[in-house]
Length: 267
Length: 267
Image 1 (cartoon, rainbow over the protein chains, first blue to last red):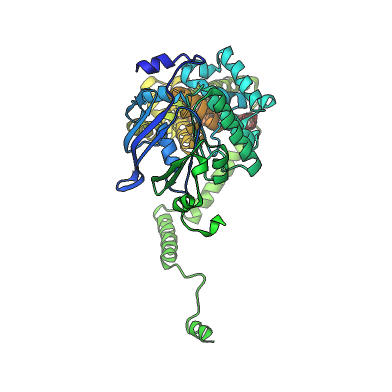
Image 2: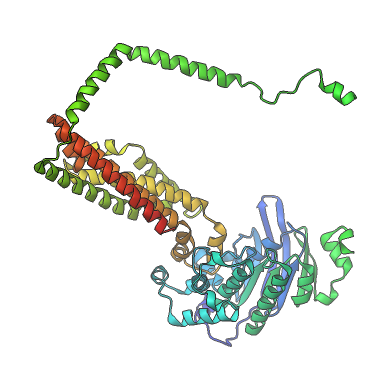
């Protein structure tokens, strides 16, 4: 609890251990059919970790277990001196404030304006009545405008989110996550709904912004090329288990064969 | 050749006959004939009714527009509109939280089922029957009619709100939830924007329907134009009855236009 209270006031340059240690994580949506089979993984407190693997192999489940959008069945996830798996609902909400998340389908509130969506990143710090009356602190509003400028959407601030294109929405999603001043960024297939050019731009934005803030990013991604290009570390998963864990340079065809199976697609 | 030969012995049927449906239709027709003989609905009775009706209609013309009658009409109409508007506002205000509580994807099961149970209770009787109960409970007049319409509005809007919430996009809610938002802020920023346009549509429709029903509850002692109408019937002032009926039609039509306009405004 102490670590949490200390983290309540975001101060630039504070020393926080941002590493994530996942220990024996297990998830069964149906009893006896584990999607994650006792996965253990250590993520350093910086850099971009890409999780690759075929569809249905538990990448998304793994990432979502970290902020418990999916409830793990067993195991530990250590972050900022807490085991996230054990937190009560209230503690979990407090912990989530430090974890930014970017989604495949952007998950913006379509009928809210762009700036309201970005400001949603502050809800964890805001009394409910202020959210109701949209009375966000001026400092938050300034920062939200700043982030929108930084992702190149400054002039869209008061437009409704459903007016934007996919790439623009993802930029808003990134701004919302950054608005939390997170100590960890999670991204669940952030580029899967985007065209190749936009995908690269979005990955550049995520890697660049996280690099500036010196926070770790865990991305699950099925595009191996993007993973190689942007990741500092690649984790390969197959059938609910980690089968590769190393720097992009060490990822060879034989590993890809082991991760994805088959052969013809590699040529 | 063998394939064609194999198919010829038995022709394939595109529309197989549905014997159980046929039997059901025949049984229904027989019952209708049987029930009408039991109720003694004969041509002679019908002809007598027609004659009676034409005498009644001729006594309605021309509509009575004497100043004292118009004053009665105006007073009753204003009271009806007050009943309708107050009942709609009160019903709408209570039905939003009730509907949210009844949504199974948002509130815990015991709360959701309690809320659903009370909505079912509010909906189980027609407003006229509820009005009779309230007239007995709180006495004749506008208060009874208003309470009856509040119950009707509650049941209707809360049920539709609950359904709208259950159909909303959980992705958008998840996006806000991941920021560590408290539950009520999540409802304000993630849920309400999604259901608000429909909620306003339901409310506008309910205002429209309360205007119509306020005449109805008056017939059983709930005040407003219904009471005026009832008195006119009892005094055999059929020409004044026609004036009232025409006035009600006019008000209901205007109400429909206004509610349609309200729905468009908030889309």
